Image (cartoon, rainbow, N blue to C red; front, top):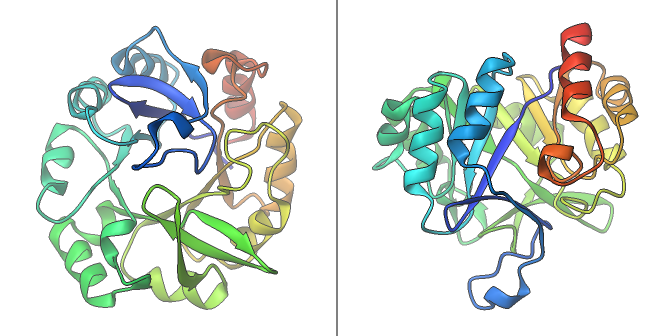
Length: 254
């Protein structure tokens, strides 16, 4: 299991938000845990110097292009990029230094995954450079992929059949447990179990981490097959989990 760092951007700033609070129609609904004084480039420098490969830069809304490009330029090949990605603009971020592009909303039509769009996206950038964002929320006993900044439930369940079917189009999955994202109140254990037992390709989970011991817990729950992102809980984002301790854990456990 690896720790994968993140740079979340909103209006050009490095932020950490509560999952699902970013609404197009109601900007005042945004719940922000952290707004950084350091730039995206500063964070990318930190991750590069610590050898933390495979993290992601995520654009939340508009006004983030310059900051995102700067971070990708700083750590070429070291981070993925997501946020409004489609076949027309994906190449720009790959050329800027992204190892992969992350896509979700674009490959859906009327809340169903479009295999035609997915195939087009995969062919345009190459399967080896595509990450599918399967971020999800729980409805009943099942997890459903959510799109449009985590506001819209799709009809696609995150289950063994879906994980197997989509793996032919992409290199990795990124999965936020949206119901716990940014709340620092505990991880979604049942979701991590699904990913660890059934994902045929590398997968990264994010959401709910609140202490250092969660790294060991995710490693065990995910059968050492699920990588982990920590955002709001890290001290570099205003939380209490020491970033340096996470780096040290990674060196000892990867």
